[in-house]
Amino acid sequence: MNEKKKVLVAVDGSKQAFDTARYAARMLSGCGARITLFHVRINVDEAFYDMGINPAGRQRMAAIRAWQNEQRKAADELMEKSCDIMEEAGIARERITIKAEPRKVGIARDIIKESHAGYSAVVIGRKGYHSIKGLVLGSVANKLICQLRHVTLWVVGGNPGPNKLLVGLDTSEGAMRAVDHVVSTRNGFNERQIFLMHAVRTWRGMSPVPTPLMAQIEEERIDALIAEATESIEPIFKEAVQRLEHAGYKQDRIRTEVISGVESRAMAMIQYARENDIGTLIMGRRGLSRAEDFIMGRVGHNIVNTVRNRAVWIVV
Image 1 (cartoon, rainbow, N blue to C red):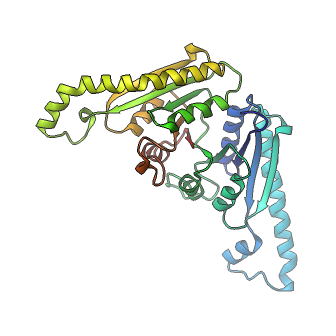
Image 2 (cartoon, helix red, strand yellow):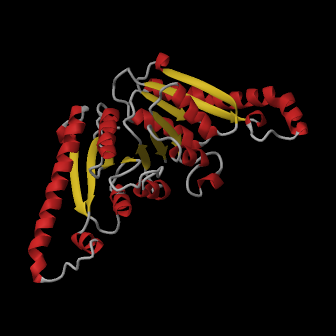
Image 3 (cartoon, rainbow, N blue to C red):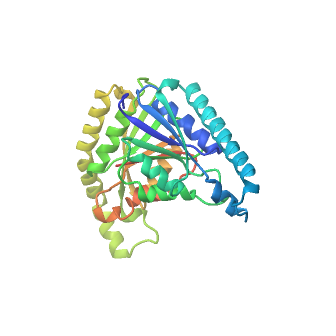
């Protein structure tokens, strides 16, 4: 990214939102991108009606104005704290724009509308201020995952480290766009490690066990299948490594891996991230099959709904 690139970071005052701002700053501190901190305030009529109070009437106008002032003050404090967090993580204050606006349609839809203003990525926390305990994803995050199809989305859980990135590759166009997005966020430092992974599903990893005939056929062909899959992904690995090296990543900081015999590509990617303490998982929104993109690629959908204390990038 560069100074012409913009990234939208949605914040709502939750601890996760502050951790999300910190993560975004660490990722973007050296690439020159400009950051917009975006906050949607609740409208006064919504808040009063939620409490069973009709805001109409002169006797309530003073209370309403006081409430509005408190909301603006809280939003100002929220945005100032978010700015401080991003500055501490390496983003210069002049690269940060603040937008705290009253809700127009809905929080998710207001974020989506703002995202059309030339942003290269939208960053959100997995759960917001009003998320229900026990839910895997907050309602706003879930809506954005399903509806935000024109711009890359970062979904951040917990406070993941910024220096290890795992890119799931296949032979689709979306996979290489994921690599290009990694290139665009390069911060100029050499600490960052890039893991390029391709997962090969085989019957050996399936549960329940396939029929004896299928198992016999699989055992006879498994080596050939893995070799074929490895051969088909090698040009993709080579191209990805070349793009990363051209961007300044050193070869010894790039690792390629083919994982075979798995039942689920998503779970293979998650397990690999856990084993290697990788904080960010990245994949293209679309996989090899266009049918998989009815909402989003199945691999990406499964990952973002399973992994919690890591960041997931869904690249368009």
